Length: 201
Image (tube, rainbow, N blue to C red; front, side):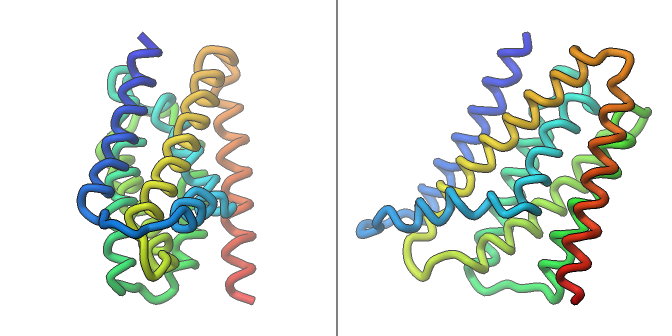
């Protein structure tokens, strides 16, 4: 059962990458855009947010709906990046991206409590669009398709890492799952505040 859900998440990730390719691809792109895309999500704010989405999805959503968190993030991320690449910009975007880490930390703290999944998915979608705008704003002048494939693949891997951590917490820690999620959420909150503070200096 678990492997089926993981496969669904992987399929969604790959389909998102293919969609970006179909929409933007044209001849003449080299590997530089792909490599830039693969590397970009490893910024601390992006990395932590994507892992947090995977953890939240398998600890807060019903088992058969755990794929929805990563799928929602990838879709909104793709749309946001496309907007960012066309010049759409928001003031204080990096500040909002850093605060999304704090918000995801709060979501992890509350992950095991009764909540409306739709609210969590709405937050994920909004945050992902902001992260996408940041990705798109730094897209190379040519080769957006390969750049998009790169960051979508890295995002999918980070989501899968989060899913794996979430499953470990959910099944491996059992009674201590809430404590583990709370600790992880608090750590994310601290990092989010630190990142925001660095931008404010």
